[in-house]
Length: 369
Image (tube, rainbow, N blue to C red):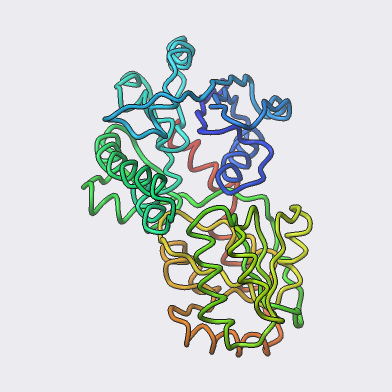
């Protein structure tokens, strides 16, 4: 008998060109390969509808994200309310996979009392927005992030008791258990496009930090590295990413050994990751999982992070960890002069955590065992 599954996503999950949709697309693709008939429901904002999704889904439905503002619901939730979605879902009793707190209003509103539901956490969203608020310089955006974090904490507490939950990091599992007192939550690693480790043996030519530089937290990490690590450490350092500010561009070109590459193509970025001697990826929040770190581990050489950038991911053994400027300078000096050679252990651990078929089988077992 065919197995049918509704999947509700916060955005259109193709092309898989940024962190928020990589897990979605490769999960859909793997579930399809394992014979699941997927009925996909996508909230649409700026990304266009995608014919490619019809290859993997029995049906694909799109819903326009609105500007609906609520004083009791987080905006990421209130703007994704859709009577049309509820009407479609009410026509059968197939199980439902909700991708992200963003799409969970029907669960919060008790629309799923007669069916099996799994809520996928992409982050502890209230913590994520709290950190966005801390690092945001624009006062109006700072207020928005602060209010959103407050509303999300109340909302996540309420919705977390209404369904089983899978989280992308062990850190988020622990947080939800301790803060909200729930037990029906398990760690399920992210789904990835990578199947093998391609880090080249030998030495690369520079250190690299990459990320979406239009996000204040990422810009702050890049600026911190420029001002506190590579201010005196004269080793080539490249920053690469989307939409950098003028301030960051200026700071990146203050020294002869530092530079910035704005808006590289995906191919160009992957080439930079492969050619770097060290991928340096500190983070100022410890929620969710850092897909750019996984990219670097699969496709690059040495990886250097801080504790927040790796905590709860299971990847601690594969990275050098430094939490302040002094220890980071020491680690960079050592790694920059150490040829990369060992990738067998890296591949073994990554395959244990990020086997798409094994992790998809856990979802199937949850719904149909």
